[in-house]
Amino acid sequence: MSAILLDQEIVHYEVLGRGRPIIFLHGWVGSWRYWIPVMQAASISYRTYALDLWGFGDSAKVPARYSIPGQLRLLDAFLEQMGILRFAVVGHGLGAILALLYAQQNPSQVDRILAVGLPMEGGLINPRLWSDTPADLADWLLSHLPSAEAARTDAPKTDLQVVQASMGSLNDTNLGELWKNTKTSCLLVHGQNDPVIHLPKSDVLENLPDHMHSVIFEQSGHFPMLDETNKFNRLLVDFLSLASGDSPSELQLKDEWKRRVR
Image 1 (cartoon, one colour):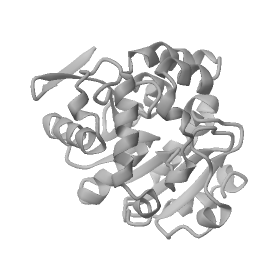
Image 2 (tube, helix red, strand yellow; image 1 turned 120 degrees about the vertical axis):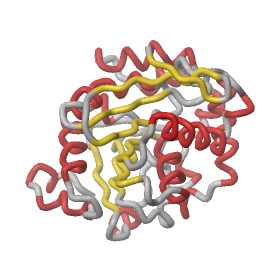
Image 3 (tube, rainbow, N blue to C red; image 1 turned 90 degrees about the vertical axis):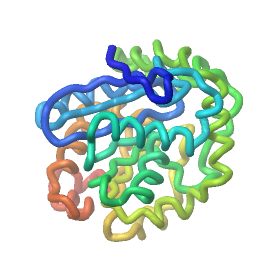
């Protein structure tokens, strides 16, 4: 296990591979562990980092730091301590929100974003996130595939307060404006059957700005990276292979994704 001290508190992270850096940010359910299959695939060509946010996994449980701004400060301090100046980021749920917010605040550092399960409006988030325990959320959302067991095992480590605190601080974030104000190249991935983050209206996804593109995983729920791992990994590699600044809509030119875009 790798860990660093930030403001005298432990932040757990793991790293695989060599090359340009990718930061993986987990969501409200689980920890860094459910990124393992994706990290292993990407680490062939990239240096992949995944960390546990405050209150999750093996990072410190410090309620005063559980807000969205608190998690952003964690990310900023982690990048500074790792010496990472420019990177791609893959964020899921809460992690996707953090990725877009960080890119807006630090546009020169974030090369591109793959945002999984990004709530594009506040009303699209299932209120069960407020009330269920982390273990109950894991049982509800995770499949029984072997690849999901790591996330299921780590879910009870989550402090219930961190989910509530981050959800509460979303009241200060206009989710509908968040993605509209993001200028960084961004690929949006949603699971068709996600019971937590409901799909936005089709006209929203069909009229995204040029630097954004949407792919729907039709056989996935809240965890496309676990429900359809091979397909997710191929998409990530294709996205990372685009030249810096290229629109993710270029993915439409590949036969692999023609039938999968919305």
